[in-house]
Image (cartoon, rainbow over all chains, first blue to last red; front, side, top):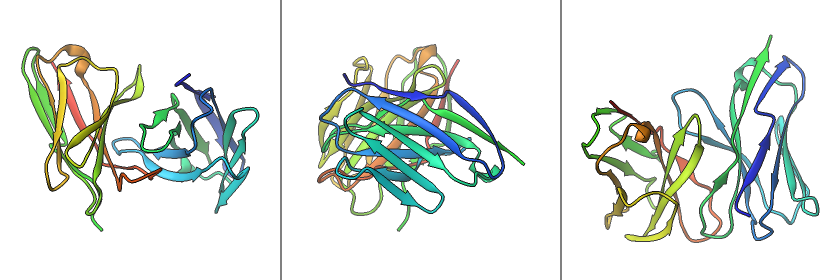
Length: 111
Length: 113
C-alpha cells in the first residue's frame, strides 16, 4: 500500500514534443504529490507539486494532472527542451510523513 | 537563503569501517530527512528528525543511525560498512510542521571497497 509505481522507466522525446510520465499509488491517505527533477551529480529538486483537492496544476511548461478516483497522477512537459534531459521522480506522502518515491524516469530530449 | 549543505561530498571507506555524514538544513527548517539512493533500489527513506527527535524511520538495519542537534543540523552514522552500502546519501530539509516541501542537498557519494 505504500508503493508508488512510475512509468515509463525511460523516455526519448524530440525537441518541441510533449513528455508524459505517469504514476499510480495505492494508499488513499496520501495527500501530497510532488515531482522532482534530478540531474547527474545533483540532489533531486522540486519541480511542481499538487494536493488532491485539484485535478490539474500548471507551472510554465510543466503540468500535473491528478485523477483521485483512479489514484493516478502524471507529469506533462510541453515543448520539451534538451535542457529538460534528466531523471524525474514522482512521490507521495501524507502529513508529516516520509516521501515515498517512484522508481524514476530517465528523460532524454534530442534536438 | 542558503540551501541544504552536506559534507563530505565524496567518501571512500572499506568494509567493516564506520562513517558519519553531516547535513545542515535550510535556516529555519526543523525537519531533516535522510534518503539512500542506489541504481537498483531508487530513493529509499532512512529516517526523519524533527526538533532533535526521530519522528519517522524506514526499513533499514540498526547499523544506520542518526541524530539531530539543537541547531537542526543532523548527522547520519553507518557502522560496520558493507559493500551494499555504497550509495548516494541525500539529506532533505523542511519546516516540518505539516505537508511541507522537502528541499534536497547535493548528497554524499559513499563508496565502500
